[in-house]
Amino acid sequence: MSNDAYALAEDAAERLRARTAIESFDVALVMGSGWVPAADALGTPVAEFPVTDLPGFAPPAVDGHAGRLRAVRVGGRNALVFLGRTHLYEGLGVDAVVHGVRTALAAEVRTVILTNAAGGLRPETQKVGDPVLISDQLNLTGANPLTGARFLDLTEVYSRRLRALAREVDPSLAEGVYAAQRGPTYETPAEIRMMRTLGADVVGMSTVLEAIAAREGGAEVLGISLVTNIASGLAEGTLDHEEVLAAGRAAASRMGHLLATLLPKI
Ligand code: 8IG
Figure 1 (tube, rainbow, N blue to C red):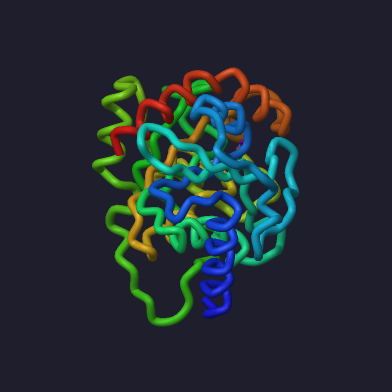
Figure 2: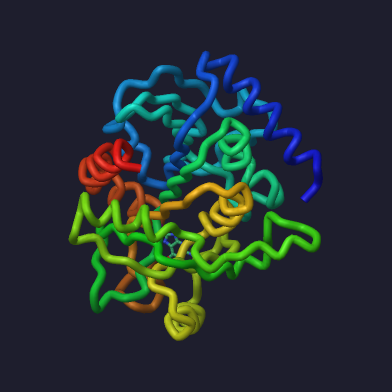
């Protein structure tokens, strides 16, 4: 944690206000792989531009991550929608990974919705295309956005209140523990057996560091994974990124509806 990273987020928020003519935002949504089509269901953007127009943002590195920022007015809320994110595996460091969340916090956001595509570790009960509400996380990245003697309580990273609201909208939503490792490799079958033993239900390469940064700023966090593949060794075949994007497109209208219905209630 360098002070510079927080100052850079303040600068980005200042520029965001100038670009959107919106003084403060209520909620930020980070749309992961395959989730960009769901963002369209939130409504017509008030403003949209490349994130790289704001200080401190890296250009997009992954297909399906548009690297754009959208301001949308939805359900009486000012929503800041990140179409894409920076991942730890890009090698830009942990501050780059959480810069979007810190910028949102600097723009007064109090609710952070983190979405991702993930591998399913419980094929007994999961199938491709299923959303999973994140109930808790295993940060296996070895990284942390906080530095120094900052003993932040993480008893409830993912807000019980927001999870209950999401289940009001969609009572069929499952809950599960999200494990993240650094990537960019997928897991070996042995690593997947380890993660199942550790209590993880879905696995990915994002979200956990952003959730910690959001909690540091006192925001409430909601996390939703979309199961876009069954994890390594638990199903036939190998893993590829196109499968992720296709599952996202297939689930887009359901996820878009969930988010659009949820936002007015938060
Ligand atoms: I999508 O199976 C997606 N992201 N680590 N493992 C990890 N990340 C993922 C996976 C997966 N699927």
